[in-house]
Image 1 (tube, rainbow, N blue to C red):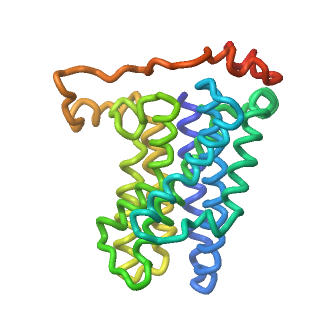
Image 2: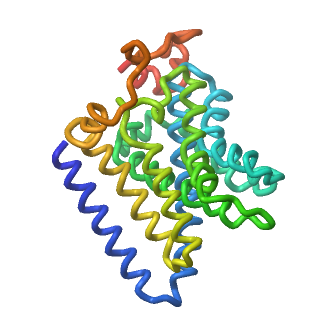
Image 3: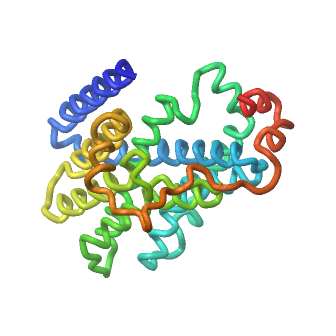
Length: 284
Protein backbone atom coordinates (compact mmCIF):
# COMPACT_ATOMS: atom_id res chain seq x y z
CA UNK A 1 0.00 0.00 0.00
CA UNK A 2 2.79 2.44 0.89
CA UNK A 3 4.62 1.60 -2.32
CA UNK A 4 1.48 2.32 -4.33
CA UNK A 5 1.05 5.70 -2.63
CA UNK A 6 4.66 6.66 -3.29
CA UNK A 7 4.35 5.61 -6.92
CA UNK A 8 1.26 7.75 -7.42
CA UNK A 9 2.93 10.74 -5.78
CA UNK A 10 5.94 10.41 -8.08
CA UNK A 11 3.74 10.11 -11.16
CA UNK A 12 1.74 13.17 -10.12
CA UNK A 13 4.95 15.16 -9.67
CA UNK A 14 6.24 14.05 -13.07
CA UNK A 15 2.93 15.01 -14.69
CA UNK A 16 3.09 18.48 -13.12
CA UNK A 17 6.66 19.00 -14.34
CA UNK A 18 5.77 17.88 -17.87
CA UNK A 19 2.81 20.28 -17.90
CA UNK A 20 5.05 23.13 -16.78
CA UNK A 21 7.56 22.42 -19.55
CA UNK A 22 4.91 22.14 -22.25
CA UNK A 23 3.28 25.39 -21.19
CA UNK A 24 6.52 27.36 -20.97
CA UNK A 25 6.15 28.29 -24.64
CA UNK A 26 2.96 30.32 -25.11
CA UNK A 27 2.87 29.63 -28.83
CA UNK A 28 2.38 25.95 -28.16
CA UNK A 29 -0.22 26.34 -25.42
CA UNK A 30 -3.35 26.35 -27.57
CA UNK A 31 -2.32 23.36 -29.67
CA UNK A 32 -1.08 21.44 -26.65
CA UNK A 33 -4.24 22.09 -24.65
CA UNK A 34 -6.61 21.13 -27.47
CA UNK A 35 -4.76 17.94 -28.33
CA UNK A 36 -4.34 16.95 -24.71
CA UNK A 37 -8.01 17.34 -23.88
CA UNK A 38 -9.06 15.55 -27.03
CA UNK A 39 -6.87 12.62 -26.00
CA UNK A 40 -8.03 12.83 -22.37
CA UNK A 41 -11.65 12.83 -23.50
CA UNK A 42 -11.14 9.59 -25.44
CA UNK A 43 -9.24 8.08 -22.51
CA UNK A 44 -12.13 8.98 -20.23
CA UNK A 45 -14.68 7.49 -22.63
CA UNK A 46 -12.72 4.25 -22.81
CA UNK A 47 -12.12 4.04 -19.07
CA UNK A 48 -15.72 4.80 -18.11
CA UNK A 49 -17.06 2.36 -20.70
CA UNK A 50 -14.69 -0.33 -19.38
CA UNK A 51 -15.66 0.14 -15.74
CA UNK A 52 -19.35 0.36 -16.64
CA UNK A 53 -19.24 -2.85 -18.65
CA UNK A 54 -17.28 -4.55 -15.88
CA UNK A 55 -19.80 -3.48 -13.22
CA UNK A 56 -22.67 -4.71 -15.38
CA UNK A 57 -20.98 -8.06 -16.02
CA UNK A 58 -20.36 -8.61 -12.31
CA UNK A 59 -24.01 -7.74 -11.66
CA UNK A 60 -25.08 -10.61 -13.94
CA UNK A 61 -26.01 -8.72 -17.12
CA UNK A 62 -25.59 -10.11 -20.61
CA UNK A 63 -23.72 -8.58 -23.56
CA UNK A 64 -26.49 -6.10 -24.34
CA UNK A 65 -26.69 -4.99 -20.73
CA UNK A 66 -22.92 -4.52 -20.50
CA UNK A 67 -22.91 -2.42 -23.66
CA UNK A 68 -25.83 -0.33 -22.46
CA UNK A 69 -24.34 0.31 -19.02
CA UNK A 70 -20.89 1.03 -20.47
CA UNK A 71 -22.40 3.46 -22.96
CA UNK A 72 -24.41 5.25 -20.26
CA UNK A 73 -21.43 5.43 -17.91
CA UNK A 74 -19.25 7.10 -20.53
CA UNK A 75 -21.75 9.34 -22.33
CA UNK A 76 -24.66 9.65 -19.92
CA UNK A 77 -23.20 12.61 -18.06
CA UNK A 78 -22.65 14.60 -21.24
CA UNK A 79 -26.18 13.73 -22.36
CA UNK A 80 -27.64 15.10 -19.13
CA UNK A 81 -25.51 18.23 -19.54
CA UNK A 82 -26.80 18.86 -23.06
CA UNK A 83 -30.39 18.37 -21.90
CA UNK A 84 -29.86 20.83 -19.05
CA UNK A 85 -28.48 23.43 -21.46
CA UNK A 86 -31.06 22.76 -24.19
CA UNK A 87 -28.18 21.93 -26.52
CA UNK A 88 -29.59 19.80 -29.30
CA UNK A 89 -28.96 17.53 -31.02
CA UNK A 90 -27.10 15.58 -28.33
CA UNK A 91 -23.38 15.48 -29.09
CA UNK A 92 -23.07 11.74 -29.67
CA UNK A 93 -25.96 11.70 -32.17
CA UNK A 94 -23.99 13.81 -34.65
CA UNK A 95 -20.47 12.53 -33.90
CA UNK A 96 -20.28 8.76 -33.91
CA UNK A 97 -16.64 8.38 -32.84
CA UNK A 98 -17.25 8.43 -29.07
CA UNK A 99 -20.32 6.20 -29.29
CA UNK A 100 -18.43 3.67 -31.41
CA UNK A 101 -15.47 3.74 -29.01
CA UNK A 102 -17.76 3.01 -26.05
CA UNK A 103 -19.41 0.06 -27.81
CA UNK A 104 -16.06 -1.43 -28.80
CA UNK A 105 -14.58 -1.03 -25.32
CA UNK A 106 -17.69 -2.40 -23.59
CA UNK A 107 -17.79 -5.45 -25.84
CA UNK A 108 -14.07 -6.01 -25.42
CA UNK A 109 -14.37 -5.77 -21.65
CA UNK A 110 -17.22 -8.28 -21.63
CA UNK A 111 -15.28 -10.94 -23.53
CA UNK A 112 -11.67 -10.03 -22.77
CA UNK A 113 -11.59 -9.27 -19.06
CA UNK A 114 -10.09 -12.65 -18.01
CA UNK A 115 -7.30 -12.27 -20.58
CA UNK A 116 -6.58 -8.68 -19.57
CA UNK A 117 -6.55 -9.61 -15.89
CA UNK A 118 -4.24 -12.59 -16.37
CA UNK A 119 -1.96 -11.10 -19.02
CA UNK A 120 -1.66 -7.46 -17.98
CA UNK A 121 -3.14 -7.41 -14.48
CA UNK A 122 -5.91 -5.00 -15.50
CA UNK A 123 -8.74 -5.16 -12.98
CA UNK A 124 -11.39 -2.78 -11.67
CA UNK A 125 -9.18 -1.90 -8.68
CA UNK A 126 -5.87 -1.76 -10.55
CA UNK A 127 -3.57 1.16 -11.19
CA UNK A 128 -4.34 1.34 -14.91
CA UNK A 129 -8.07 1.78 -14.38
CA UNK A 130 -7.44 4.21 -11.51
CA UNK A 131 -5.30 6.55 -13.60
CA UNK A 132 -7.46 6.41 -16.72
CA UNK A 133 -10.54 6.99 -14.59
CA UNK A 134 -8.83 9.98 -12.95
CA UNK A 135 -7.87 11.46 -16.31
CA UNK A 136 -11.41 10.94 -17.55
CA UNK A 137 -12.88 12.60 -14.47
CA UNK A 138 -10.67 15.66 -14.94
CA UNK A 139 -11.29 15.92 -18.67
CA UNK A 140 -15.06 15.43 -18.43
CA UNK A 141 -15.44 17.99 -15.64
CA UNK A 142 -13.48 20.69 -17.43
CA UNK A 143 -15.07 20.00 -20.82
CA UNK A 144 -18.56 20.07 -19.33
CA UNK A 145 -17.90 23.37 -17.60
CA UNK A 146 -16.30 24.76 -20.75
CA UNK A 147 -19.30 23.83 -22.92
CA UNK A 148 -21.66 25.63 -20.53
CA UNK A 149 -19.44 28.70 -20.14
CA UNK A 150 -18.91 29.10 -23.90
CA UNK A 151 -22.49 28.42 -24.95
CA UNK A 152 -23.38 31.03 -27.61
CA UNK A 153 -26.32 33.39 -27.10
CA UNK A 154 -26.65 32.31 -23.48
CA UNK A 155 -25.05 33.61 -20.32
CA UNK A 156 -24.86 30.63 -17.99
CA UNK A 157 -23.79 31.66 -14.51
CA UNK A 158 -20.77 30.12 -12.81
CA UNK A 159 -22.76 27.83 -10.53
CA UNK A 160 -24.66 26.29 -13.42
CA UNK A 161 -21.41 25.86 -15.37
CA UNK A 162 -19.88 24.01 -12.44
CA UNK A 163 -22.99 21.83 -12.17
CA UNK A 164 -22.66 20.99 -15.86
CA UNK A 165 -19.06 19.95 -15.25
CA UNK A 166 -20.14 17.82 -12.31
CA UNK A 167 -22.91 16.13 -14.30
CA UNK A 168 -20.60 15.40 -17.22
CA UNK A 169 -18.03 13.79 -14.94
CA UNK A 170 -20.18 11.94 -12.41
CA UNK A 171 -23.80 11.43 -13.43
CA UNK A 172 -22.99 8.60 -15.83
CA UNK A 173 -21.46 6.67 -12.95
CA UNK A 174 -24.47 7.52 -10.80
CA UNK A 175 -26.83 5.94 -13.33
CA UNK A 176 -24.46 2.95 -13.65
CA UNK A 177 -24.61 2.25 -9.93
CA UNK A 178 -28.40 2.50 -9.93
CA UNK A 179 -28.74 0.10 -12.87
CA UNK A 180 -26.35 -2.35 -11.19
CA UNK A 181 -28.23 -2.08 -7.87
CA UNK A 182 -25.25 -0.68 -6.01
CA UNK A 183 -25.12 2.28 -3.61
CA UNK A 184 -24.02 5.28 -5.73
CA UNK A 185 -20.42 6.00 -4.80
CA UNK A 186 -20.75 9.78 -5.13
CA UNK A 187 -23.53 9.99 -2.52
CA UNK A 188 -21.91 8.22 0.45
CA UNK A 189 -19.17 9.40 2.77
CA UNK A 190 -17.77 5.87 3.08
CA UNK A 191 -16.47 5.98 -0.51
CA UNK A 192 -13.47 7.90 -1.78
CA UNK A 193 -13.80 11.51 -2.83
CA UNK A 194 -15.08 11.65 -6.40
CA UNK A 195 -17.80 14.23 -7.01
CA UNK A 196 -16.27 16.88 -4.76
CA UNK A 197 -13.02 17.33 -6.74
CA UNK A 198 -14.98 17.45 -9.99
CA UNK A 199 -17.28 20.18 -8.66
CA UNK A 200 -14.46 22.23 -7.16
CA UNK A 201 -12.34 21.79 -10.25
CA UNK A 202 -15.20 22.91 -12.48
CA UNK A 203 -15.63 26.04 -10.37
CA UNK A 204 -11.93 26.83 -10.70
CA UNK A 205 -12.17 26.17 -14.43
CA UNK A 206 -15.04 28.63 -14.90
CA UNK A 207 -13.36 31.28 -12.77
CA UNK A 208 -10.08 31.05 -14.67
CA UNK A 209 -11.85 30.97 -18.02
CA UNK A 210 -13.86 34.11 -17.35
CA UNK A 211 -10.89 35.88 -15.84
CA UNK A 212 -8.94 35.43 -19.06
CA UNK A 213 -6.40 32.88 -17.87
CA UNK A 214 -4.46 31.50 -20.83
CA UNK A 215 -3.55 28.17 -19.28
CA UNK A 216 -6.77 27.54 -17.35
CA UNK A 217 -7.36 23.99 -18.61
CA UNK A 218 -3.95 22.82 -17.46
CA UNK A 219 -4.35 24.42 -14.07
CA UNK A 220 -7.67 22.67 -13.67
CA UNK A 221 -6.34 19.36 -14.96
CA UNK A 222 -3.61 19.31 -12.32
CA UNK A 223 -6.11 20.40 -9.67
CA UNK A 224 -8.79 17.87 -10.54
CA UNK A 225 -6.36 14.98 -10.93
CA UNK A 226 -4.78 15.65 -7.56
CA UNK A 227 -7.91 15.41 -5.44
CA UNK A 228 -9.08 11.92 -6.48
CA UNK A 229 -5.53 10.67 -6.21
CA UNK A 230 -5.19 11.93 -2.65
CA UNK A 231 -8.67 10.70 -1.75
CA UNK A 232 -7.85 7.22 -3.04
CA UNK A 233 -4.39 6.93 -1.52
CA UNK A 234 -5.47 8.16 1.93
CA UNK A 235 -9.08 6.97 2.00
CA UNK A 236 -8.56 4.85 5.10
CA UNK A 237 -5.88 6.92 6.83
CA UNK A 238 -6.33 10.70 6.72
CA UNK A 239 -8.54 12.52 4.24
CA UNK A 240 -11.81 10.63 4.18
CA UNK A 241 -11.47 9.56 7.77
CA UNK A 242 -11.45 13.22 8.80
CA UNK A 243 -14.34 14.03 6.46
CA UNK A 244 -16.27 11.03 7.68
CA UNK A 245 -15.90 11.98 11.34
CA UNK A 246 -16.36 15.76 11.14
CA UNK A 247 -17.90 17.02 7.90
CA UNK A 248 -20.37 14.32 6.96
CA UNK A 249 -24.06 15.14 7.04
CA UNK A 250 -25.87 13.07 9.70
CA UNK A 251 -27.81 10.08 8.44
CA UNK A 252 -31.53 9.93 9.16
CA UNK A 253 -32.27 8.12 12.45
CA UNK A 254 -28.63 7.08 12.65
CA UNK A 255 -29.03 4.28 10.13
CA UNK A 256 -26.20 3.20 7.85
CA UNK A 257 -26.70 2.42 4.21
CA UNK A 258 -26.53 -1.24 3.14
CA UNK A 259 -23.21 -2.36 1.75
CA UNK A 260 -24.94 -4.12 -1.12
CA UNK A 261 -28.48 -4.04 -2.38
CA UNK A 262 -30.37 -7.29 -3.02
CA UNK A 263 -29.87 -8.54 -6.55
CA UNK A 264 -32.58 -10.03 -8.70
CA UNK A 265 -32.15 -12.66 -11.36
CA UNK A 266 -29.49 -15.36 -11.72
CA UNK A 267 -26.44 -15.43 -9.56
CA UNK A 268 -23.29 -13.71 -10.71
CA UNK A 269 -21.44 -16.97 -11.34
CA UNK A 270 -24.23 -18.55 -13.40
CA UNK A 271 -24.80 -15.33 -15.36
CA UNK A 272 -21.30 -15.15 -16.76
CA UNK A 273 -20.20 -18.78 -16.66
CA UNK A 274 -21.05 -19.25 -20.34
CA UNK A 275 -18.39 -16.73 -21.39
CA UNK A 276 -15.00 -18.45 -21.88
CA UNK A 277 -12.75 -17.66 -18.94
CA UNK A 278 -15.35 -15.76 -16.94
CA UNK A 279 -16.41 -18.59 -14.66
CA UNK A 280 -13.12 -18.73 -12.79
CA UNK A 281 -12.83 -14.97 -12.43
CA UNK A 282 -16.42 -14.62 -11.23
CA UNK A 283 -16.10 -17.48 -8.80
CA UNK A 284 -13.05 -15.89 -7.25
